Length: 257
Image 1 (cartoon, rainbow, N blue to C red):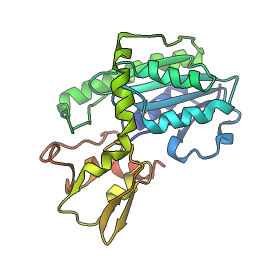
Image 2: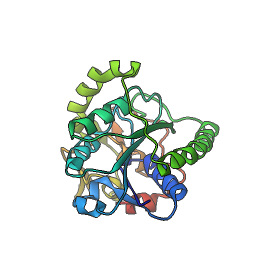
Image 3: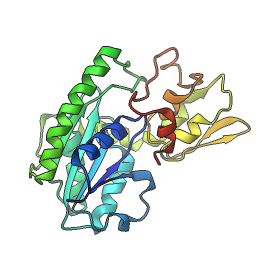
Image 4: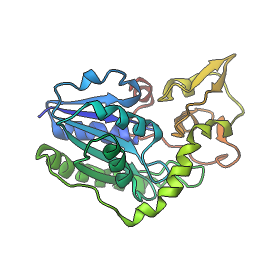
């Protein structure tokens, strides 16, 4: 079975998860970065198409919603969704499933996996021991998920208690592109790391300083990867520990698109 794994990732969690899943699925699986998947004909010939992404504000990232809408032209495939979360997944899969339904498609199978929290605007990065345990648990979970996908397991996503978070998600999603308006830059050395890691090309360097556009996805990759911690979300992240998935070298994070 040929499987297309279409992923969106900021600090590397969903990317690392996608790589591990591709490894377990074996020959015939391919990775596609959603921001770079301009021509859906690239997915021709794949029996299964999966979406792998983080949970943002209890649901799928805005760019993933738009991608699923584009998938409406593809039929007769096995669709699956794998979402990684830090604090809680809430109704993320339910909301992703609804996006598939709105496109006239069925999300045949879904799973969520806990991975290191990185939304330091309101939360904190776990300890090294916690991070290592989460990766160990992820590796075990992916083995079963890959087996389910190979078997094209049917596991429709129904309503869950987490769906009560839907209004919060809808409101947050409306304003997600405004995230970068809250970024404050002090002590920038003009290295351009933020520009190179932004998965949606929302940052350009001008006069050795980053300028933010209006298509921010709120992934905080720029904030986490800055070698000087020069980018902060107002004053809420000042002095807080940063995070990049330790299984993904920074250079590879830059090259993943």
